[in-house]
Length: 207
Ligand code: GAR
Image 1 (spheres, protein in one colour):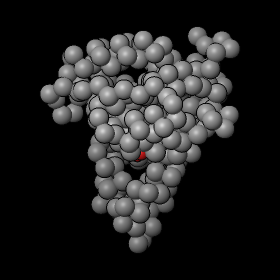
Image 2: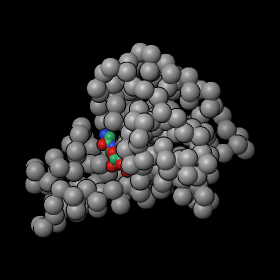
Image 3: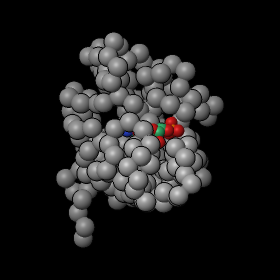
Image 4: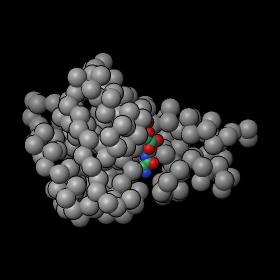
């Protein structure tokens, strides 16, 4: 699909954009052979949009519509259209806090990856670091996975463990996990670009 062309990423995020910054930095320093085709957010004032604009990368806010946890059909069509127009090869969810299903996943079948701040399948959903601290696990971490119809499910591409320390607070643990994310996500994307097109069906192969 890409031949000599660098992989074109469409990055979706709702928040401050630290994962996006790490990905952009990896592209800049040559450790990730890719380019950012478009950054899209459902939050007009999201830091991720500003980080993209600061780097001269195309960035768009698209209003999500009336629902709280997903895109309404008009918004979903707008997200799909914008990413297709930008000719992205891979959709990279970097703190995108809405569930993508149906038409979106059909449009980018086997081409959507996500990062989640826990060792999935433990602690899916919101504030996974807080869930881990409250549960009392001694190790948590982060996971990069292909996105399927579920919430924080789908074949796992990579994980990194992070210790939970006795004196951790919600914020210190969150910070340690996010530090791990900032290396794991660019490294995993680089592995994907080097390995060609590992579809979800093959992602779990352990040869
Ligand atoms: C990241 O920690 C990511 O794992 C999490 O949102 C944060 C975004 O931070 N995503 C989820 O919880 C998805 N279920 P960032 O905007 O600084 O990259």
